[in-house]
Image (cartoon, rainbow, N blue to C red; front, side):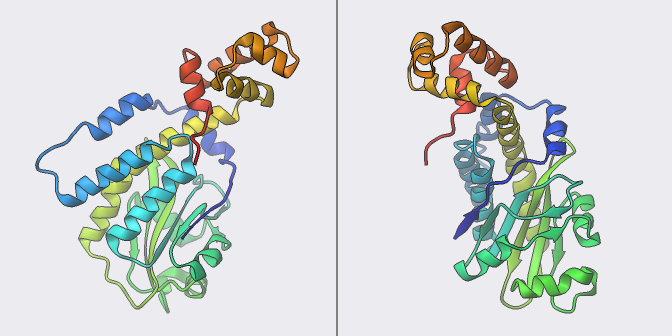
Length: 274
């Protein structure tokens, strides 16, 4: 079971992404998927298949996280996991996606964690997965130990999501029955999937969301009507505006989204159905 929560992307993260040069979606797809080396193992092939699925939802960062989280929980054969977009300077981390048994999901989704707690800061600063083989009575967790015990977590592997040194979010894979010794292979599995596949796709997805959010309501309405096949004149009649006003709205939308034509603009603004 996955729970999604609508959450506005942190303003600081939006500004930091504006300073990052990201590949165009078509280039990103080629870079990620064109390498079909015959030496790739079964795990790498499954990762690539999941990345291809994630790329179908570039306009929906929560869906990208859902798919990544579901994949890692299955690959590591753990009980549950959570993930969320959070800026490194945010006060708290509250997951936007939780995967696991229904009786655990709601509790995890409703429990914010202090983003500046030493344990979470250690995860950010490590730049890779941080493991806790045992949660109960673990002094390393400090004041978070009873919180995780209450959430039913017995062991966990937490990993930050970075792209070009910009922190995009956090991801945590949990065990809920007994201790778990996280092997070097588990560390490498999570690190590789996050760095190789999730981070570049999520960065692109968040950047696209930021562009969408920059549009005014009037600009968005014009783009959505354009996507339905209406001409500028038909959009103007539908909205009771002049064709010149419609043209100005669409020009502004293209400028804000850095798109060259109507097709690219529609692709950025319109979320896929489903």
